[in-house]
Amino acid sequence: VLGSFGSSDDDKKQKAKFDVRVLTNNGAVGRFGPSLLKYGGYLKQEVRVSPKQAGIQLWTVPTSGIWAIEARGASGAYGILAGSAGNKKRGGYGAVAKAKFQLYAGKVLNVLVGQEGSRDFTHSHRPGGGGGGTFVVYQDGRPLIVAGGGGGGGIPRATTQTRGGGGRKSDNPASVVSGSDGNGGKLLDTSDASETVITNSTGHHQAIAGAGGGMHGTGVGYGANWGGKSFVEGGIGGEALPIAASFPHGEYGRGGFGGGGAAGVLPGAGGGYSGGGVTGCFLICNGKEGGNAEGGSSYVDSSGISPSIQPDKNNGPGKVYLRLMAEDVEET
Image (cartoon, rainbow, N blue to C red; front, top):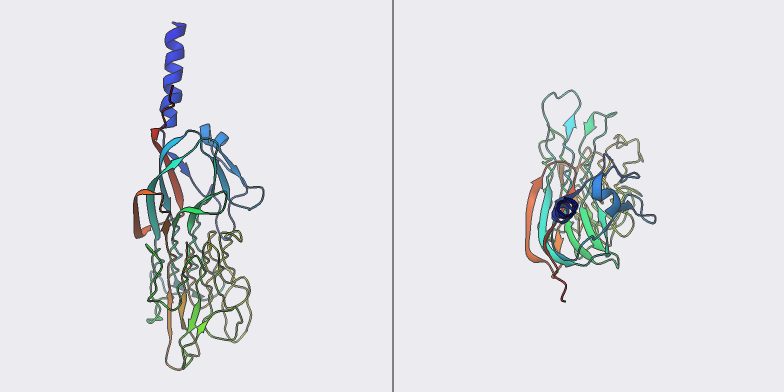
């Protein structure tokens, strides 16, 4: 009897190795990640909050072998116009990135689970903030897998503002405002006759929003802290702090944790491996009104087996799924 009990207990432990592990935002919303984790069971032992980067979760690999990892970026917030019941322009959905990797017991991965953008609730113009990207990164800073977050939705009845762009499969070289090679996104003020791309957060333009942060570079914003922060800078979402009374907007159109850009009178872009950008103008635009917020891009390291990325797929906060597919067999 004791022998069979021990065998049953061993069976349970063996089965638990292959259970799906799901890392979440732990109920956190907005610009900042979770400060407390609510996991039970073996995740309670395997995951802890980083003491160096607020909101980053540290997962210790419990078993050597081939692990399937699925990362889901967060969606951007939808845009609404106060008093326009039922009308909204939805935010872009986050990308879903998958691959299998050889991981070794005891190694620690840094995990940032992206969070949804938000809308202002004090002003009539309420475009959506950008969704945060979801990142799984080695301790040495190399990204393993990243899923881009969705861009925020524009304001209904502003017919030239659009729904948010979805989290993307890869960088978009055709876009002049998209980030590339892990950098943050940029802004483009369409009222400017030369349509110059804005590459610093000066506030002397009418592209009143924040671009998404990337792996290494922070997104450009209308002012300081409007753009989403990069992963290496903590991944904090952008904040739409009021600057000029001539361009009224609220301050609560925030980007989601994971580099989401803030929304002012234009929607904010999504964070990701490279951040999304924002194009447009609203209010004094010389007939060139518009508003489009891109999603962030995704990435899978070259060591990944059977990589797959689905753009514009995940509606809601980000998640990371981890599952042991094949345990390493020790040679005797």
